[in-house]
Image (tube, rainbow, N blue to C red):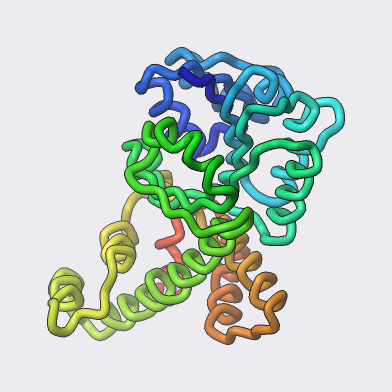
Length: 292
């Protein structure tokens, strides 16, 4: 059985670690703060003092941190980074949501060192991570994916392969752009209007899912179900969707596109982030539109 390395212990990384442990894998774990990883260590994960040590110990290394800056640090730090402990024959995976610029650079750095690399952003939110039903969005060499496909079954329900390295990240940004624009932000505005008009939201929800009429999606349903949940319950925070929308803007500009709906939605999420909702669930953007 392959040894698994996880760099990070946030919602998604913690869920993956837990499911690898449940499947009987030996897991080596590093996180910026050991306290956040303690529950996983209590379940049998091995603590490593650095990403370098994770890379040295594991056959499959999955990096899952917050953004480009954190990702670059854990990969490239000359003393403690993944590259400092990397070895040929292992598979190195970036599962953070990252910009295409850094993803492409990271793929090149791996290629220069003869390391097998996949970009594999995740979708499925907290429920998918904890339940082992994530969708994995993969770019890289098909043969590398096949070499770890059975292992990835411990954390996922379905794997989508999009082509060369960087392709998975490109799709992830397209996906999160659509989620932000249509499934969450537009839905939040529509629900806020329905509330102000005095409509029964449960009746609205039922009608939106009528097969002959409804424009709603599972993400729209999520918004309606989660918009009033306790503040401490977070599946995917406003600040992280704002970050991903910024990466999508950069990607669009890279291809010569100026997307007005993307730009407007990014501005709304920036406003929500800056107005105290940064660490709240992304569905709480409805608070921008509700009358107090």
